[in-house]
Image (tube, rainbow, N blue to C red; front, side, top):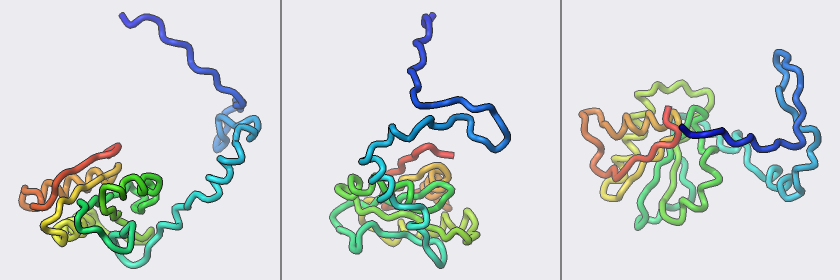
Amino acid sequence: RLGPRPAAPCVQNVAALPIQRGAPVLQLASDSILTAQMRREMASEPRLADFAVTGGPQFVRHTAEDDPTKPLLLYLPGIELSGYSLHRQLPGLAEDFCVRWLAVPPDDRSSFEALREAVTREVEAEEGRPIYLLGESFGGVLALSVAQGADGKPPSSLAGVALVNPA
């Protein structure tokens, strides 16, 4: 037996509202808990639209040129299909990897197979260097599909796959 559950932490500055269709269940009683620093960070935070691309599915480079001595990390995003979810981790990841992410225009209707083929082409184009796939949510399914390969074998330069909240 595990024993009694600990008490829930106290939530301050939150008021419960009656549940109405379309209305928030919780609302901040005041925004005084947001510090000036937090407000500045939120104002400078990139928006999803800042990661939008045009054309077809493509890989976006974190830096203008890759360092060929570093392994390549290909980020395969969730259903928003941009690099937005990765942006806060880019500086740290770029210390050890050349980072690229799959970006798909919002109006693009490429099939799953077409996206898998685009990722596979990107992996195969980098033959001779270790490549890691980082798949988040929908991108996790895509990463596993690429790792499985069309013939049941992973691409030869694929060094690893990491899944984050896979779908």
